[in-house]
Length: 131
Image (cartoon, rainbow, N blue to C red; front, side):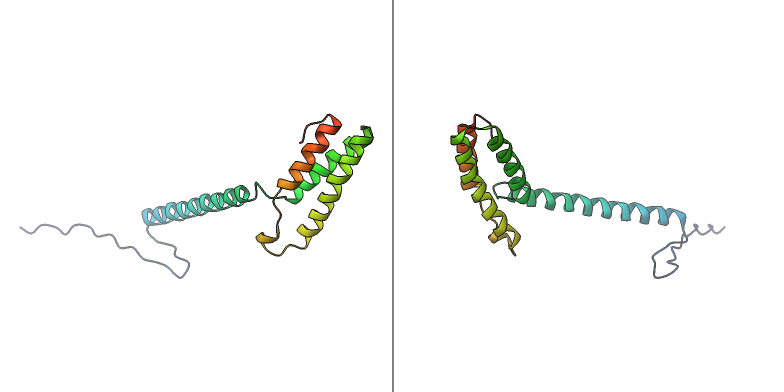
């Protein structure tokens, strides 16, 4: 007596788009695509976080705006010494903003060290805290 042949499964790719006629293969293919997309999203997220971390010590547009807004408020309600300190810090931030607008590479972005020092001095003279 002859044993019957085991059923064989044939996977057929229907076209260039990579769709499968076999349901199990289609599910596996979909799982694979979801996995690849998830991995790509995770890698993109890591790249974004690394970019943000590398800019943490840089004088960014957001930081300039936040500090300029604080200086404006301090100058409005401060004494003469406070106003003078805010003018110096504001002048530095305006020049840094002009430089940032013309930046064409990461090397053109300034460190926030000097601006932070000027902001700290202005905050002390105005009785405020650097935001």
